[in-house]
Image 1 (cartoon, rainbow, N blue to C red):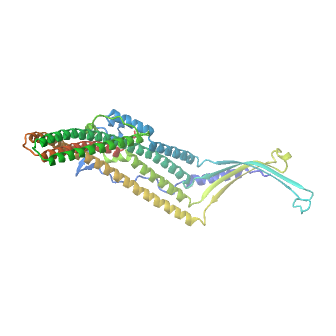
Image 2 (cartoon, one colour):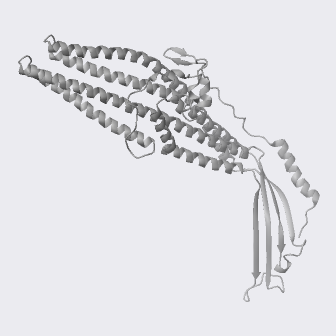
Image 3 (cartoon, rainbow, N blue to C red):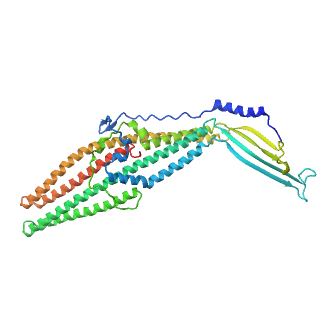
Length: 476
């Protein structure tokens, strides 16, 4: 058995360590966030929106504070707790977390236990390969094998960075699902309130149509109007009755959709009696576009994907260069079981350093590196696109809120005027100063105006919700 010289052991360890000290570097530059060219303010319908001083930034306000309706908040709590898409996103985080833990162990030495035993004997009918006088030879060994790869070119470090970026991307992806879920539930809830309002408006108009039809029948019996007037009013009444059935169907479908978002079987949804005031968003500010980089989950997830691609490019680049591995083995070896514990003669040990440079795989490795560069460039383009789209969505929501305020004021005035025209037309018809066509036209126009006003109010609520989502709010 051999013994290792102390000076040789020192040289075997010292030379690689010095090489590692002076050569440890990464083959790619350190990641730097691309310049996205964000503007200082949002464009709103040709104007520029400025952040209000002292007003909280909407993107960091919890949904329990942003939404004032307690029934809606309860619905959001149920959705956040039970939504299946959100639960899938949580599992993705758990998977990425395990991958990150595995990557953190990438540069630890590898230690293996190896045991070996062999017995060779000769046949009575064959030529013996054993030494003369020997009919049996034995060999036994047990050892520990230690191996460690020096991370000279940053391959292992970049692998850890890629795993960390993927974990953070999965976290931001969950936040994005959370934010979208909050917005979807709020929009569904407002649509349900709109349907309730439309059902109430249609019901009141159905009662008015019944009253007008009864009046026309009386006037027909008195010979003051023709049967055509009665038939026209009956058609109007049946149209409203059909609209009522359609709205009731839409209510059931919307309740089912909200139930599924909350992770439960389709059921009735508790809700407010009317659409809430849409002025709540005035209590918060859109801030400046630069805040999107730090608060909007999909923007951060896109950047994490870019960071992962950047790190993987470093891994692919490092594979082009030599790898350096230090191996050591120590154990006991014996030719007979009786000699197993004859120390120190049965002990052995060795240390070696290995430099491995791929030769015939260079073309394949270079192609893989170029592919990683293309992926990185693609992820950078997607990141810029995500930022651009985020700014557009906020600008669109701000413009929608501002213009819907103007539309609501005009629609409210129109609705009040047409309601008065129905009352006037009915009075004039009763006194014989207006014909039935004027009454029908007045009722139809008033119904359309009332439904339009309710829809505009719902759109304002949706615009406020969309602004909240576009700013990255809802996941805190």
